[in-house]
Structure formats: structure tokens, C-alpha cells
Amino acid sequence: MQPASAVTSRYYRPELDVLRFLAFLLVFLHHTLPSGNDPRVVHLLKGWLPAFVALTDACGYGLSLFFTLSAFLICELLLREREKTGEISVKQFYIRRILRIWPLYYLGVILGVLVAVLPGGHRSDLGGIAWFAFFGGSWYITTYGGLAQPVNALWSISVEEQFYLFAPWIAKYFNRGALYGFCAAVFAFSNVCLYLLGQSSAVDRVIWFNSLVQFECFAAGILICLILHGRLPNIAAWQRVALIVLCLSCWFYACYGLGSRFGNHGQQNPGSWHLIAGYALAMLGCVLVLVAVLGVTPRLLPRWAIYLGRISFGLYVYHGFAIYLTDHLIVQYVATLKNPIINSLKGPIFLLNICLTLGITILIAALSYRYFETPFLKMKKRHSVIESQPIAGDS
Image (cartoon, rainbow, N blue to C red; front, side, top):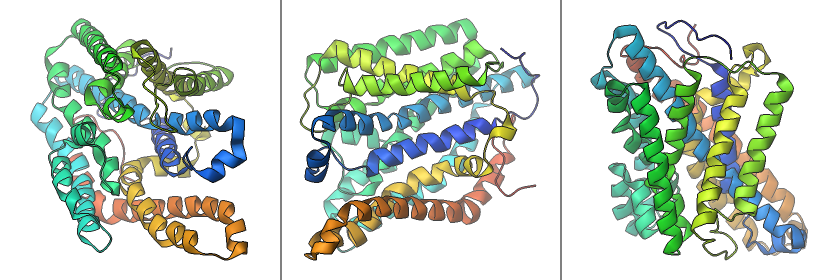
């Protein structure tokens, strides 16, 4: 470990921005790669189909990585604030979170309402969107299923907001020993939930979108913060690569060997112990990749990846709408064409569409960050005790 850094008014690690972007990219691929039920995929991959399905499912653990990283940073900033000032201002914490999350989140909710009421939308989705307006999206999908529109992706933000209900209070009143105990209690509670869901043969949706299950990742992030105690891993490049490979192996085996994500291609609930082991491996993978990137020399990090990490919140909020747009304008249109040449090129067209969707997402997120989010970020900066991510474009 590198020595713990002195507590100052600033804590910023550019490598975590790169990790944010990689987490988004995994989620994007999870949502855009073809389904295991696609006849073309079945025909092309044949016996390799289960491995492909596990790979696309494993990409979904990008969300688990977001949760782990978020908890690590929140805990780190709050503990540094307590060490610097002797206390934690819960009020200032909530002001900062509101200014960072709510403007863009509610813009996403409004876009979801527009999708529902415009031609081709489903007005019946409006009742479900109301749940999202009160950060209950995860519980709505767990209970009733997903909506027929891109606002579904905001469920994970509702889980984060639920985490924020107790995060500043435990950081304020718990010492480090009590925080370790809190993490252990969350791990135990999440695994009891997994056990009961496995025993009841719950469907994948009821497990994956369940906040009580996902809280395990937040506990992991807090635990890493406590263990590192302000220090950075001082490890060789090959060891970092090995940790990343081990992370990917954990995620893949959790899906392929243990079936912890079983919503695709007709799989059944694998049972309590497989779920517990699978979600534990997923969480372990998040911890491994976080440790692998912490302390990477900033000069080795691409500037474009750091920038995309800074706007990753917008990338995440808008990507579902970009997918919805290109699916309706391109994919569904191409599917109606009877031209044999076009039909023979559906594979390359599909790949080009993924690239186009990613490009549209980046463009919208960049414009949103510059012209919509930045004013709120500057207000947030005035309420910061420990400044974290700088605002892109500022000198």
C-alpha cells in the first residue's frame, strides 16, 4: 500500500473516472448485444450459445460496479469530511446529492413521460413512471415487471437514492468498528434475501432489481474504503492486469457456471446456494477491478476515457433513449425490408447500429453535461467540504 494521503479539501482519482466509463460501456453492451433468443445468434453460435448468453449477462455487472464504486467514493468523502472538520453535515450531503442527481434524473423521467404519450408509446406506462418519480423504480420492476420504454434504466438510480437515505447517518455516528459491523450485517441480510428468493423459485427480475440484494455491492464499496483507509494499492502492472482478468472470470463464471443471471433463453432459478455464490462472485469481481485501477499513474490514462467517465451519469441516463430511438428508426425499418442484399447485410447493419447508438449517446451526454448539468455542478461545488470530481472544461 502507498501511505495514506493527508486529509485536504480535495480528493480526486482520475482512474475512477475511467472505471466509471468502463462500467457504463459494460451496461451499454448488456443492453445492445443481441439476445440469446435471436434466431441469427442461435444459428451462428450453435454450441457456443450458452457462453455468449453468459457473456452478455455478465456485462450487466457493470451496474454492480457502479454501486460498489459509488459506495466507496461516498464513504471516502464522508470520512475525510469527518476527519477534517470533526463532523459530517448531513444537510450539505443531501444538497450535493440533489444538485448532482435530481436535475438529470428528473429530465430522464420527463423524457419517459414524452415517450409514453407520443404516437407509438404506451400511456399505460405512466402509472409505473410515477414510481420512478419517487425513486421507487427498482421496487416497481421487482413487483410488476419492466415498462415498455427506456425509463427502465433509471431503476438503478433509485437504488442509489435508497442507499443515500442511510449513508450519511452511519458515516456520521458509526466509528470504523461499527462500520465494519454494518457491512457484515448488510452482507448477511442480502444473502438471507437471496436464500429466500432461491427457495421460492423467484424469477430473475425479482432478484436482480431487488434493492435489498443490490445493497451487498454498496457494503463491499464501504468495506474497501475502510480497509484501504486512505491508502492506494501499490502493485505492479501485471498484478493489476491479473486482478482485472480474475474479475472478468468471476463475472463470467457467476453467469455461466452458477446461473446467477438466468432471465435469458429460458433458464430456471438455479437455487439458493447458486444465487448466493453467484452474487458473491459478482461482488468480488467489482472489488477486484476497483483495487486493480486504484493508484494507476494518471499519465497512463487516456484523456478521452477520463472525460467520458466524467459525463458517465449522462451516458447512463440517455443510453436507453438512444437505443429506443435507433431501434425504431433503423432496426425495425430494416426488419421490414425484403431486399435480399439488405437481408444478407443485417449482421453488419446491426453492428453499425450499435456504434451509431453509442455515438448518439455520447453526443447527447456531452451537450447535456455542458449546457444542462454544469450549472448545477457549480452550485454543488459551493456546498462541497471535500471536493471530488472536477467539472469538465474548468481550468
